[in-house]
Image (cartoon, rainbow, N blue to C red; front, side):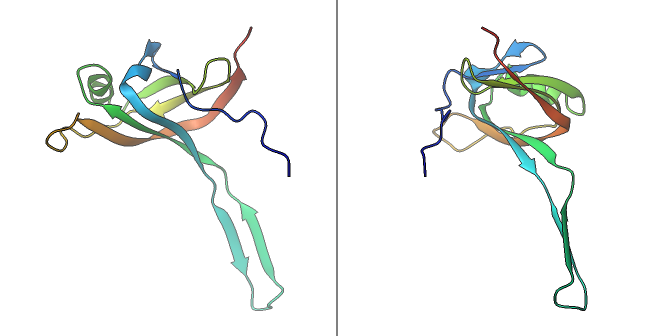
Length: 132
């Protein structure tokens, strides 16, 4: 089997919420699809139907708490926020709307305060390539 082409290391990412760059506050950013498989079995052992439901997306992040991204997300809880996410310069860009929700405050003693969150994506991400 040939090696995957286009594999990349996430670095120098760009994560913009409402046009403001927040990549320097994230340690993780990932768009995650959730596609349910629907299975119906009948009384006949050969009678099984399967289909897939519409994909629902979420935006998972880990980030530093502070008075910038953390404040923006909490101040805009419940609002739709436009996000532009590019894991690597020159690579694929995802543009989408996430629903902001309150995030955690505080953490363990002796470490930087972080938050992990999973935000629902409204609709589908739009995929594009960076123009040269």
